[in-house]
Length: 284
Image (cartoon, rainbow, N blue to C red; front, side, top):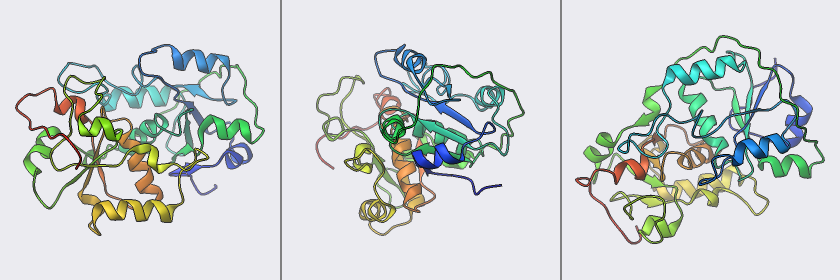
């Protein structure tokens, strides 16, 4: 059995090594256009790929207090993955068309459930097609199997944890949103602008080079090392607007060899839903 891919996989490796036993998932999505991903998938996808929707498959029910994309329940997600043929030894590959912005969510979710054989297609669909690989419109028939679920609840924290550790030296919150939203400007998705006090900003797109692929591990290690000021990566709490692009930063840290960072899944959309939680604006 080949060595599993656990962070990124290149388009050429995917084309050369993938087998019917692998599971490839198209995670394309666009905020405000609920049918975009399904329509894009139907118009052409990587051969053998299945489709997973961010809101229907990779998120749980929204209550108005738990963020815009709360985590799905362990049981329902495991059932969904098993029904699509993800078993204990299955190599999973996730892709999208925005540099891994949504594919990284599936990458993190699988690792949260204890499945490490998962990678994001580096450069996404554009890298696949630019390397001369085909798309098709065929919808594969799923072959159900048992998904072995071993949840790692230590990979995430909740709002109470963040609130309790504000101002302490044992936590560094890293916010993946665009700099203007971090500062509290041009907020169009959430009712309150700003950021968690003490957070620093790492726009997730800064993990990518001009070609749309992730930067080299050494460069990512240097970038995140500066933010952590030489500290332990396990002190890092990653968040964004709704717990999606924060996973991109977590993937970048994995590529850099910086393990142990945790996700605040509710992120800003959950944090700002409670008016008693403090809010900061302006630069970090």
